Image (cartoon, protein in one colour):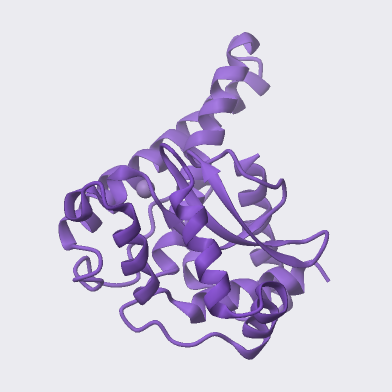
Length: 235
Ligand code: MN3
């Protein structure tokens, strides 16, 4: 399910680009190139988010963990192409589909995550702020629920604020691992990686402190642009 929603999101951004309506989040254009998933560079220096997120964590997280998902997603896509072409035993399909779901979702979530943060956060657009106020009562309420979503996964997962296209509502859910989403079709706008690899070097077991630190470096401009693109794409 995770991959399905991610692919739809990327496809939607491409369509918007062609229509020349809202400006695309830059990173969404850089996670896939020439027929393959690629590791996009961080949109800032490895140490730009200090002291909230340390350089060593960013280097490991981006260069090693995210790179592994890119490699795994491409490998799985390749194997499924081979199965479709009759070159590989179809009984292996289930295994490679699971691999694609896990690694592909991991890649898509990290592309959004890097761009959801900035050393210079910027402000919410009036349209996004209005949607938040309407749905949650206030930005503060929304962040409180988002924090709860980040603390909820007992193991590896994500806190996610997303746009639900059927209802046109903003919703907050937790993802388990990368790919087990709360709502099919949900378009992630703001995501926080709460796998231990995302915070353990600096915060050890204090996930709540890491979530509080993240709140100080949210790139609201990026989140607002994702919201505008999601709404425009599902009008
Ligand atoms: Mn991660």
